[in-house]
Image (cartoon, rainbow, N blue to C red; front, side, top):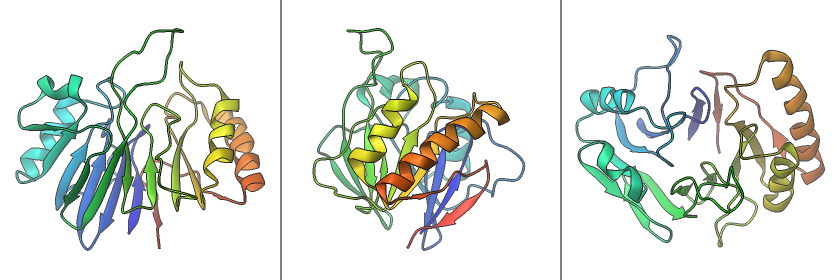
Length: 212
C-alpha cells in the first residue's frame, strides 16, 4: 500500500490500483490523476478538510466511488453515506473501522462539529481533527498526527505519539506553517517519535511512502 500526502490533512492510500482519498483540499499540479478511486472519506465538515467542489470533481471522474461523512456533513453533497463510531466497512480492497465522534474543542466546553477517525486495514490510523485513538489497535503501522491548529498544542501532538507508539509518524494538518515554522514543529515531533521508537516521516505535498 502507498500513501501520498495532499495539502493539509489530505491523503491518498493506494492498494492494488485502487485509491482511498481522505479530506481532499487544494490540489497541486504534481499530484497524480485521481482515477480508480473507490471511496472518499471526509473526517468533518470544516473547510480546511471538506471542499465540495473538489469532492465533486473526484466523483465526476469516479462515479462509482462511495462518499463517507459524519452525520452533520451529510446534507452538503448528494449520495453521502453517514458513518459512526463502531462501523466496519469493506470498500474495494480496503477495510475501514470508524472511531471517535467529536472534533477537538477550540473553545472549552464547545464541540465544533462531529468528527470521525478511521483505521484502514488495521494499520493506518487517521484521527481527523482529534487526538482520539481506536480501542483495539495497538502500535499502529502509521499514525497521522495533527501538527498545528487552533485546537491543538504541540505538547498534545507529542503526547499523542507517546500514547499510540506507532511504527511511523506522519505529520498532517500543517498547511498554515511557514517553512521555518514547519522545521521547528517537525524537530519537536521528530524527537517525540524517536523517544517512542517510531520512524518520523514528514512528507511534502505530492510525496509518497510505501506502507508494508
